Length: 216
Image 1 (cartoon, rainbow, N blue to C red):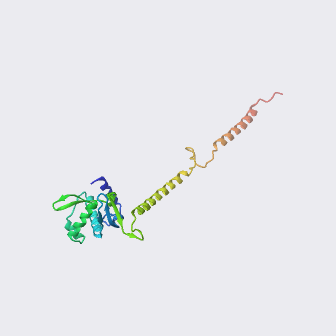
Image 2: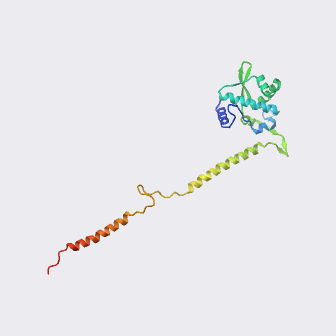
Image 3: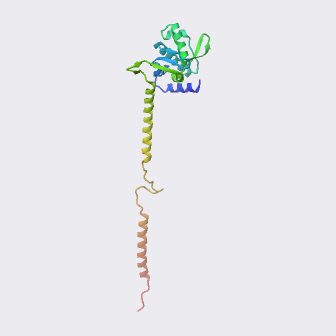
């Protein structure tokens, strides 16, 4: 399993899901696609509801096998039965998915083919998605939806930085000197002055008492 595939599986694990149930995620631009142009060949592939269903099923299976560090081996007849379609229909759909590059053959195990199933975004650069129109515009606009999503994320980040800046502007009060309690006036200097003054007065009085009286 490649690092990209490991990252994809980890990202999938972060999504809430039904316990013990494999699941997959398909991009809206594929689910809403009417046709897809393959840029390298100029061929246009019609995207049918059965094709979308088959892709979702295979992506689910691929994620499930990958989580167990196993390859995705499943007989086409079994997959056709699981999707309630004929074997011939499934074979044709599978061929179209391979043509688009979102499904690849990874090997064989007996009569069963092994598959690698990509996220649509992994191969989207080589494809051009064509959507049905609604009121003169594509029924799904991937670029606009992606731009709006990025804008919302940017707003959240900006708001977060603003809060940090507000915190940094607050001036903290100076800490008291070590060993000196808060909000207690420094009385040592005044006390020392009072004691010194008293000592001076007492000393003068004592000196007068000790002086020898004058001789008459």
